[in-house]
Image 1 (cartoon, rainbow, N blue to C red):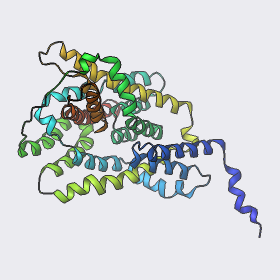
Image 2 (tube, helix red, strand yellow; image 1 turned 30 degrees about the horizontal axis):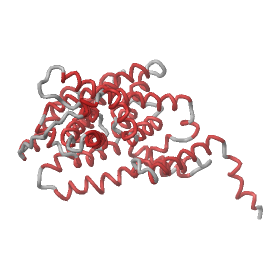
Image 3 (cartoon, rainbow, N blue to C red; image 1 turned 60 degrees about the horizontal axis):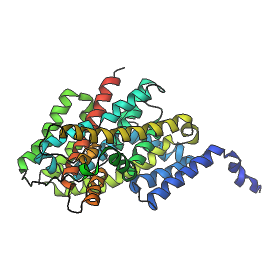
Image 4 (cartoon, one colour; image 1 turned 60 degrees about the vertical axis):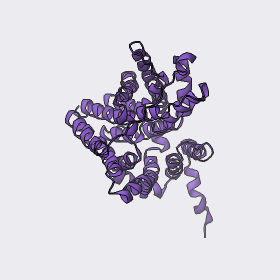
Length: 367
């Protein structure tokens, strides 16, 4: 028996296969050692290894099937939105609706990045890259797929990597744009009861209103708000727990490993990928800056000052961004509790990012 056949496949390895395998190992390291979005980065990293083995049956078989069954048709991101919606408590936002303004202001990076990306990419790819600034992985995947972007893999990696890097990216930007005096502003939280009826009506009305103006966002906002309705209705506790845990975890596993379909060396290792990563970082920075500067602008007209740091929580990286702002407040003043304010802004950013994704689809989807 000629045993050389066992080594035949080794000769098919190219340099880009090895580089992508190392990238897969890096994602696994970040997931395990640094605990950076481990539920997504670990399956994404392992999937990257699987698809970069020459002649891999995983690429042409199960991963391909998962990709076309759940990502190419946007099913996995939408199912994940049900779980995210079930996790979100809109109470802090409902008790202080003006926080919604900060969620809108923190989406500026999307449209700023769109202008920059248009200098290097075609319209559809530029729009898909810009949505990285939504700081919302499912929205990024859904928009990139809907616009048939050829860079879905790079966009997904950038979106989730920067979400995981929020504790590193946001603090320097916030400190650069605020003074110590501003960071010391206290915002006492006034507990206001939000009725059960209000909590139930909110996801229904938001879905109707947003969909009426931006029908392209109907699926995104609808699945998010459906998950929240399951949480708030009070009669579906088991479904709410399932959505928050079993469903969200299972879909995240499938999502992470099937995204690797677009992470083969031939597709991923291009100058364009590095450019996308750079543009994604710019989007995150500008989003953070937009929220902070908007809060500073409002303070010019308000007697009761706002701590501008909470504006940074308007990105959709829930709940990481809200917690980072709260932590920074405590570092400046151990008695300054900003958590409820920052979380309220953070959940408003979740809604705003979905609306921004819908607007991008409305503008470019019919082109």
